[in-house]
Image (cartoon, rainbow, N blue to C red; front, side, top):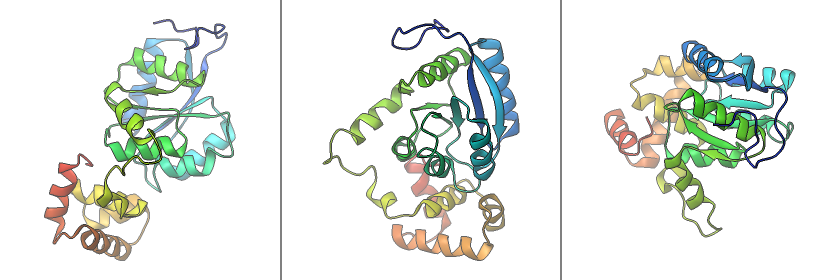
Length: 228
């Protein structure tokens, strides 16, 4: 891998790419820092954030070149970060780094303005390469995920990723995932900064829209679609 050249063969970089990590797991952020430091001197991690609002604040202050953005964050998720910042900070590039390879996550994030989407199985060397390419305004995807994006943007007549999911609001999808992961209502309320009563309301809406009877059916439904 050539660390210093841009993806299109342009002039070499003379300074590291300034990167900000956004992920709600401190141990994962520490691991990414270590991987990037070991893999290359082509990137410089300048900051971290653990939730949506913290990310919005720190990105606005530091203006990194590339943001490594987790999709599932407390407080609204990576899409909310993109919604608030992408129009205001056009020079900041966003690269999704997520455990999820669900089509609706990939497409929603790219539609929000991210320049790429890679999964957390990526190696340190490949992640450095992806960061440098995104900084140079290239688009980068894990091989399996590129097909989702091509299908989604093939034309205006492209079908919806999942008609059932399209009936759910963004918050309902967040609650759905957490329920399917085994979270109790109190845990979901804490994770999303909402009340237990609001969680109950969202769960009822999800069950009604998906025509399911209980959380066990909901978990199976989510598992079948690899949303967990």
